[in-house]
Length: 244
Image (cartoon, rainbow, N blue to C red; front, side):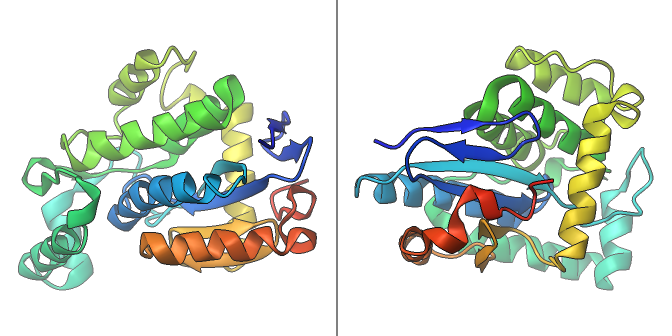
């Protein structure tokens, strides 16, 4: 089995050829949650073929102008989509399209649309302190906290509690997370995604090779991974757009 190691700047290197995926996502994107559940299954299938896969989650803000304290979800989404009825219809569409994921959606429990910058800092901390596996765990916990439990993942106390669950030394949210090196790294990666003209999430890249966007089926994801594995010159970690 191929093995991979991660560097201090969030990039990845390999001892043998192993596929490294950059997954551009926001922590309050329902399709990103669906895509993660499906990608986990796709990777399991892909690794049965003898491949290795490392996932690195990269930040994206669907609502970059969101106030730090967030906004009332009903008011915000009613304004964004024209009516609360339209917003509820979109939520229902996600639920219907994701029956294969076992996600227990609880949209009625959500009171706010959060600012997600602090949550991206937590995701970055997870990678720096525990690597790709811990980062994936934290992403899952953030998605579940928001979509299944209705917790405000922009709330400093919620983020601190989630960090404590996995023994991350998180400091204080959001003040500390907005002024330290972690925040600088998150801002840098947000800028990279913007320069790369990534406008939709989730977007999945292998190096500079764009694989797909959206919550594709497990089969399409497996086929994309197989394609990337056949293109090591384009998909190797040395060509990642996130390498400085």
